[in-house]
Length: 296
Ligand code: SIN
Image (cartoon, rainbow, N blue to C red; front, top):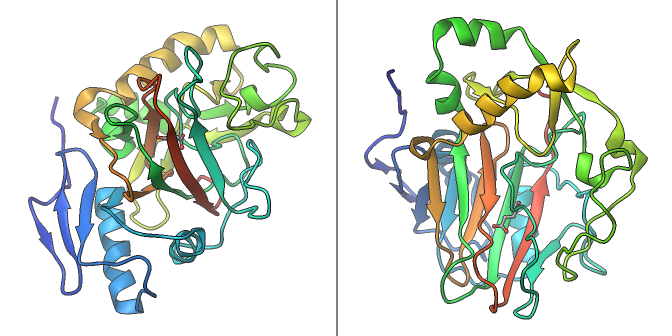
């Protein structure tokens, strides 16, 4: 099997420096201070790097929530997340927090997913800013869904190209909601019992990125329930194969956060997972999201 990577060894722009961090995805951007307004010509380079590397990291930034929102808005209108309570008085920002004494529980985003893929128009991107990080652990992993698609055989691709997949907001709805007494972090308030999240939405199994024109796998283990006109049981073996395939190590990059680091990622062609390995330490991230369009 041939894996085609489109990552350049080193991409140098006029206004920013971009250093790829893996063969799959992810690049560190330097020579940018996100607390300053970003001129259009600089943002054009950031956007170009975003489309090439899918996740961009800006190290050791000193940002207020207003800076975070201003940077996020450069990518498009802000998106308010319906599945989690935002900060009081700041509805566009979510605090992803787990306290040191919250041990033996799950963490927000701890299963592979693409953000809110069950919505008619899922957020196109998300931004995460590290306010307080554990001394070790608490990494985030992303997987490149272009590479996952491109690594499949031609016959399999052809079958998936015509297949729609039913997505539901299982953890946030009524029908499939986890038990009310499930131990989850009390520091982040997930929305539960939202009947809207039970609505089954059909999205393509393979979506075409509106900016790059590349095809990406668009199923994930949190929200993808079954294929169109098939039962969940019939769909399960194929979905399980795709979930495993989509997150193979060679499609992934794992990032270790430092205080002040910011990541922005493209939900249209990646999945991500927060690693829950930092019991006994506090981790606080501020998170925004950017509105997207209907997958096609
Ligand atoms: C998420 O956005 O799913 C959580 C990511 C993280 O906290 O690392």
